Image 1 (cartoon, rainbow, N blue to C red):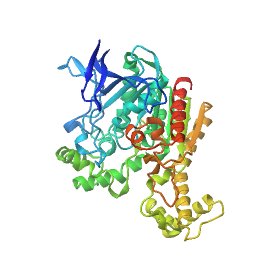
Image 2: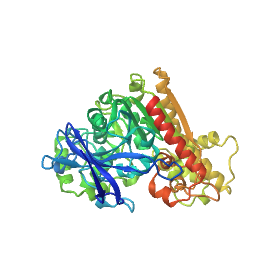
Image 3: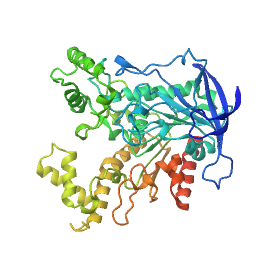
Image 4: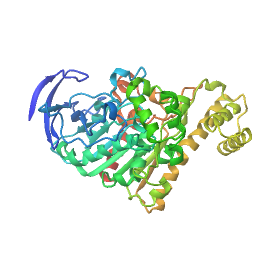
Length: 493
């Protein structure tokens, strides 16, 4: 059923569009279409049929918020047709100016489908976002222009983050990897329903950036995800970047949060008594109180080797991983995104202080030796003078990019090759730009780093950035190239 209406619905703009109803096995879903036209000289072009805010799993709510997700068998029985014309709230995470708390909710396991036409049979690209934000960040305007236009169905998902998704006592009351189990149910929904939206369930590519790329890597290793997808695209992330052993899980960040949030003595950690005390505490705590502890002491949440989702270490699982065709890459100066403070004053001592912060258990001599080895290895024999703050800013960025990003991604590629996978394509983004996301690392003199997240505007063509900023011809060319490369890979491998 298609109806022509003037849409003020909850769309960002008033538009002449059609409401489109699709019948799924879980109930009817109603979205809308939008036509930018075919003039590729315009900033936005292309046509898409759009379905926003479709539940792909039953979100655990209230006292069950720390449980695993469940399959959703039927959409709201009180409503004849599910309204898929607007984005749903993001999962809980620390709020900021760009994502206020009133845009978040524990009922957040939704996805969005953007398709060229529901009557087609197009390759499918399922996107897993990074460690913050939500599926609405990757808006339909840019997705239609840079991806859907090329003849693919794009699905964006959101999943539980931080403490909500990864805090664990390694028991049934607080199981590990809840956010990853959320993610598994999304491609499972795609396999079951995407044909109703014009997608080909036999050609599914999962792709992600940052923590989303780490998720792609983890899903490729998990026996629970086999058969749900067929190709991978990873940008700026691999399994090795966010992984915990069982010993790590039973201590570290989880005990730290239990002590600070609930005052729990972590002796007998994981016992029924301690789990009960934690449950009583967390049920009474507001989501705002819980997420306020997400980044205490700089510790972050990681995926656990839990015996099920990841039954073993990544290196061992990689030996039996299916030979997925994979497009894997990074950006040139990833670590510039994480530079803090005034980079114009950075020196060799600053570099050593960073090492101490990252490895607090190292003694003074070991930390200095590690820092010196890195400096010698990345400086190509020419170490900047202390007064050369620009030189130290660049060198420190190169060191941190190598040790935190490139080295781990290279190992992932090597594991693919050792397992006999030859369908691998590698890339590095080297285009420097003043597009806002590309300058997030901070500018020192005339240095504009190609920082972590610099690739995102060229894939997703964010409307607010491209409409507000005077992009160069080179920026447009890079966006066209990357959108074409991503979609060509999803279509042809």
